[in-house]
Image 1 (cartoon, rainbow, N blue to C red):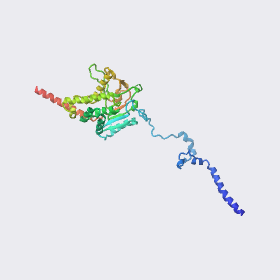
Image 2: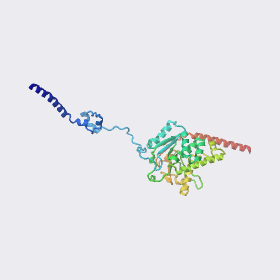
Image 3: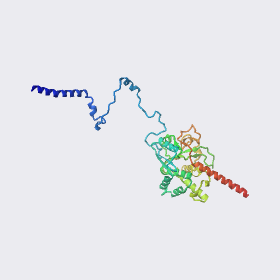
Image 4: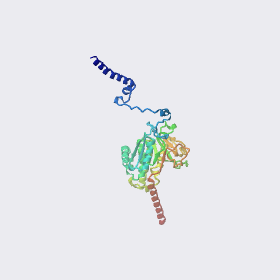
Length: 371
């Protein structure tokens, strides 16, 4: 009887003792497994501890280990990597392009992507011929049916493309860029500190920077229209649109045809004077004359080295938007965009000029024969 009691005692105490011994040896592990501070404890998951380092490597790990990085190339200072508002005050954070169809060349795709890479917070929109017509009808149908009528009927692609860019940015603001233009400097760096708090209505850049030619002479300089920026409802762009529409209607009346029957051969001058950079330049300066009450011409911006504000129009030096045209000057503010001169309209314009030249020669020959 005594022996059986002693046996039961041994059988009970030995396992308990073994358990307590093991518990004491692993006590420091338990809090890690069941503590609520362990991130995955509530999910029933446990972090696998890292394997212990060998004594030969432990002494050098702290001094030689470097974190892995994706790239060792320094960030381009012209790239905007933040999610903050990068727009020029008052000008929409958006870049606009247009094309006949959504199918673009690899070069055009790369050039467009340059805008998005430099300005990742910007929105982007590409209008095709079909969506552009919808855009114009939607934005101007109720308020300016005369604009819609001219745009709908205009059969010459380059003239429509010029008018469209003005209409787009006038309606919604932002930056216009031709498909063959790349962005070299983030837009938030375009406006220098001294103009950050000015009310800028529109931004243009000099394509040709020429001196004043005297009283009564047409302005010699010219702003490019492959890139420009403006506020929604821009006063300056409204003046440009009115000038272009008036020019197209006048050209139509001069040739005794409707707008729908116009051809490049009927142009009394270059495309740039009808819808392009020249008429844009003249319209902008005429508008500034009315606002400022004084003459505005080449003397206001010829040979500028940095962005210059004339009224509410910020004018960039030649290096900004047209470095190639101006010989890549080194004494001006930096290049903001690069124009690759891949426009397809130039061939059609050149052919039209050649036809017109031949017609004039034939007319002269006929007149000489009649005499």
